[in-house]
Amino acid sequence: MADDQEETVVDFEKLQDLFVYDESGQNVRFSDVYKHQKTIIVFTRHFHCFVCKNYIEDLGIVPHENLQTADVGIVAIGPAPFKFIKTFKEDTDFSFPLFTDPERKVYKALNLQENLVHGDSRNSKHVKQNLFMGTLKSTWNALKVGELEGNIKQQGGAFILGPGDVVHFAHIDKNSLDHTPINDLLEKAGVDPVSFPKDRR
Image 1 (cartoon, rainbow, N blue to C red):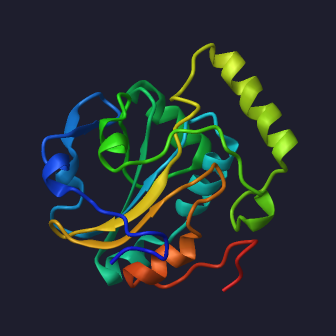
Image 2 (image 1 turned 120 degrees about the horizontal axis):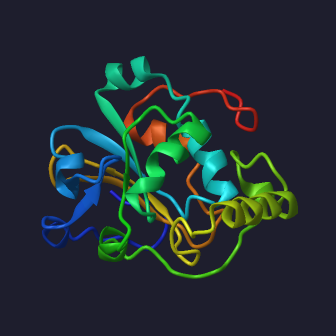
């Protein structure tokens, strides 16, 4: 079951032999991420993106007990080299598994888009900074590191997959602010909602 966009097709056969990387650089078969459990999988933009940081910060506060009750997992995947995972998790207090797909093979297999289109932050329930200040901070952080933490054109998406080759929900982001509200993902996965500053429940 896909979202209200045009039908999103997940080619599980194509995904079967693709890998993502953990913090230590070990490869993990992508299909193993959702093999045994219904899993919310969020694909981010590059790790300097303030929109993604704000979103992952909020995703990280979903109570583990709510997920355990519903038998649902949460995983995030970024298009950066694995060496940036630790810092990104520390910056966002993200307590769930985070993998990277530096060559973006999974991103491409899922037809996630490449563009430099920015959306309207007023439509986001998770962005806490205005576009100007957020972009300025992102640029400054990139300059400090001296290296891009992912392709800046790569957009993200959100899927609820598993257990096994089952699609419960699929959304491909059209721009940097087209992310699915986290409570919408939780609702579609059968998890109790969470109260966020811009999405009171």
